[in-house]
Image: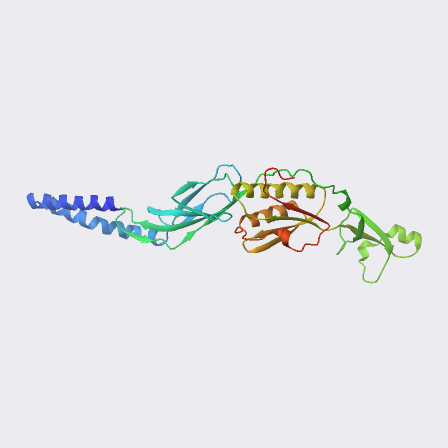
Length: 308
C-alpha cells in the first residue's frame, strides 16, 4: 500500500510540474483527472469493500504425513478487491503457535488438531490507496489423524467373549433369540405363530444380545510429539482390534481438562473419540493409573518405543 501511495504522489507531482511549465487545457485536465481518480476508485470499490469477507480454506482432516495446505480466500458480492492478512496457526495438542501470510503448507509430521485463525485483515480499494478493516472472517480446524501402531503382547481376550445373553432392549433384529411364553406388554410382532399353534400358548421369539464384561483402555495425553504419535496410533490400532473381535470397550484419557471418557462400539465412535482427543489440551501432572478403575480388562497405553 505504501508503494502505491508513493507512486500516486509521484504522479500528482509530475502533473503539477507539467501544468506549471506547460499551462495548457490538457495539462489542467490531466491534473484534475489524477486528483479525482482515487475518489472514483474508492466510490466504485466501496460496495465490494463493505461486503468483503475472508475465510481459511483447507481440508477438515488428513492422515499424518500427507500433504495439506491452508489458504486465505476472500469473497464479495461485487468484484473482489485486493486484501491483506495473515493466518495464526495453533496446534492444540502441543500448544505451538506460528503465523503465515495468505497460505501455508501444514506440517503433518505429528498428529493433532491445527486451528487456523485469520487476523490482521485489511481490504483495499481497486487502486490500493484506501483500506478498511475486515470484520467478517471464518477460521478453520484441520485434524491430523494418526497412523495405526501395533500393540505387541496383548493378553488373551477369549475370556471376554460373550458367555451370557440378555434380552435386547426394544427388541428388533438379533442373531440369537430365545423362546418364552407371552407376557402382558410384549409386542405381538414377536409372536412365533408356528410354535403357538403347536403348543396352544402364545410363544414369543425374544431377541437376545451378548452380555459382556467391561473392557477399558487408558492413556495420558502428554509427552513429546513422538510419544503422542505412538500413544494415539496404538489407541487406533487397539480400538480396531477390539472391534474386529466384537468387543465394545471404553476409552479414558487424562487431558488438560481432566479425564475424557468415551464408550466405543463402532468404528465411527472410535474415530470421533480420537478426533476429540486430538483437539484437547495436553495433560498436566498425574496419570490415569492413579485413578480408581473397575474393569475386567484394563490396558494402559504408553509412549515408549519398546512398550510391551
